[in-house]
Image (cartoon, rainbow, N blue to C red; front, side, top):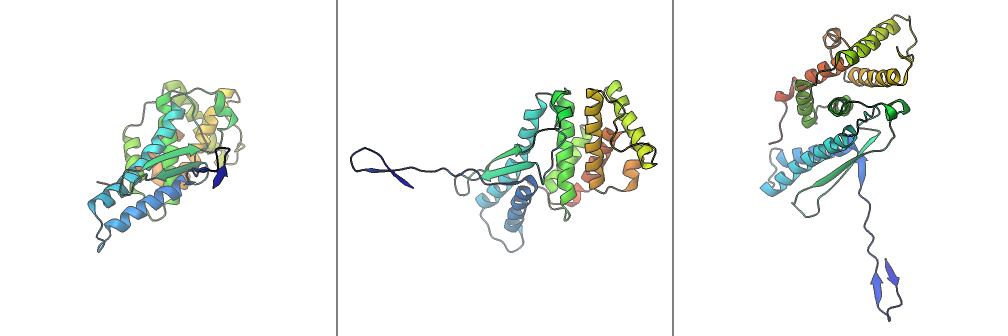
Length: 250
């Protein structure tokens, strides 16, 4: 594009910087992983710099997800609509050939109304949101290609924070109500406590239940759980159990 300015007869170019190309978090992660696998496949003969850059791309995108979650968690916001295929988008670029990659992940949807005013501990926010992201990735990763998210699942499960007794009791009550729903004795939409805080707890409970069910863990994973937070931890542990059988990023 060229624009003419009143500066003699010299045309001055206007350089348009294109916006970053964004894809869903899941699609971006899968593209980066497959690019790395292609370089590491038998018969491929890439340079060390090419392999190093491909590995850095995978890790840079993973780090951008952590930064996105940490930014929200630091404010006490627990966003319950984080989905790797719908509401999280990632852009990645490599400024120089065979150089390091930079990446950014953003959320494209506001949190539900009940979550905007609720304040949670930053540690719990970060853990629960990270768990939701990981489980939404695993739900779509039918071929178990994204080993980095399974490694992250194992790390999250092993460092799961303690939940204070009062909050644990609230989630336990939601868990008991969920059993009543399955028996047809309660509405699936009613929180145990209709206060703003009670609705926020219900929102987190519902999200974690949906994410955990989407991963199709065996029945014994759910059978030993005592509330939705515990189910999420147990599901992450199950996801991470087979991580040693998958290729790792070195």
